[in-house]
Length: 324
View 1 (tube, one colour):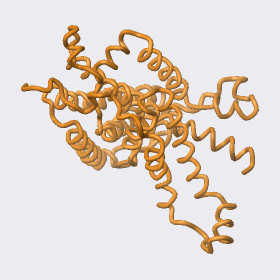
View 2 (cartoon, helix red, strand yellow; view 1 turned 60 degrees about the vertical axis):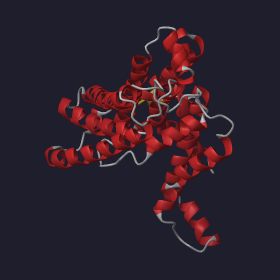
View 3 (spheres, helix red, strand yellow; view 1 turned 135 degrees about the horizontal axis):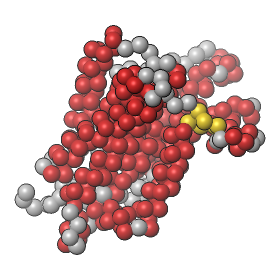
């Protein structure tokens, strides 16, 4: 593969990893606090449509910022519903998360059927574009990969470093980790377990909404029903793959971003088409085979690397464990 193709794939791998890492950051915090949010796909989808509508309403000048704000607020509101059901009413987290996904899919599709005839496609200037970092972007090989990205990429890098530091080095991080390992001990120390867990879930909504806004107004400049395409479920796998650590999450996001862009490259590669024709006897593979590559890689990676640790001891368990 030519060097230019390799650089392009690696650059796009980091670009594709942004929504995964953004949503994964919130999910990691929630799971460390003992809550597994299977409704992440729905939160991202609501973020997608809210961002598009918000950006369209604000217009070209402030569309990007308005879209992100709308996405964050909408997803945080839906995450608060999830928190109310699971943290305060102690409903099953898996079932409730599945219900959130179904609600988001139906609601976004219905809203879009009403809104689409009334909305034109967003102009390119409405979303945030790539922001090369001056001379750094001109460094051979490394420059285009690391320093010619969307602004959200740089924000995500800082956020990942800060959250990793908070979780491992601060009292706040100690409380969050204790919520997932020993909530009874937290309660005995005077920590309000329910409110802390609610805050962690709402933070997940914030991150998922921003991730959704990236998909609709920064990457595609359009909305389509179910445009998340299972990325929320992939994020759940990435948190497990990364063993509930920031470093593992980063590695997983970059890896699956690379797989995602490799499949896009292979779909359009003339040399790959000639290889198939010469060695397999077919000219093209159906595009569905390429689209499944990231999810197939997720299954293989989980089976190969995600063994030996079951996550926080109280992950997914309602609290308190006795009567309400």
